[in-house]
Length: 268
Image (cartoon, rainbow, N blue to C red; front, side):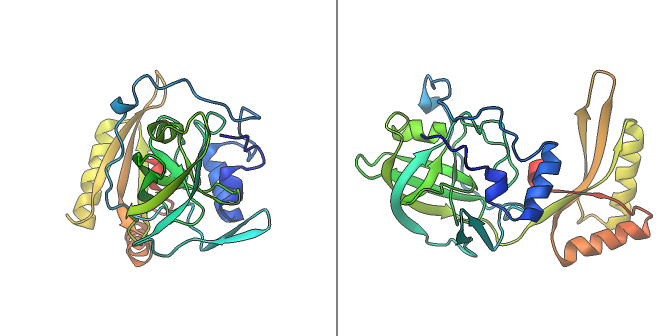
């Protein structure tokens, strides 16, 4: 592990458009880290009790997948496809400075989950990381960008570093194999209402289901905003970006729903 204060994952790893969106969603400025230096999390008592992610087909993240981006004057090109990807190099890990903050695809970094950062793999990708000197391995879900140090090919969460036994030495030579790349499409959820009256939310859900047809999923998510306020959020999705999303928005406009809220998976 090392200090990474010169890097801001939402800032340097995505273009300005994505940076602004990320900052607005987070409700803070790009200099959002409460710690100036990275540091080691509390030890994991039994690493075997933490479950590695199960690789599955996921849509490509709405955020964090620009075709190209530049960090410290060097341009990186995100892979359009990661099928069959295998590479060897140095793995490192990152810790508590970034815990609780957004990754490049807008999710929240948790040092105790099996995740990782990679410079060019499409997000999210599931990969197996194998330490070459002892053949220990771990499955991680890549949802971030980095590491931007010469020769380092992947940055692991603390949990993944512990699984490989590199949390103390900081780095190790590894092999990275893609198990499951993301589906080459992006999805959105469309929120059409956030109502305090549960019966009104159910009525809206029923009306939309009748108008849009059985193939369109309309759901309600109940969120306790405070002790006094509970909101029932009516959402449609997932809907593939492009023509399917535009068609849905036109259907909603015809129903006088003109300003729905578009959500990514990380905002659900």
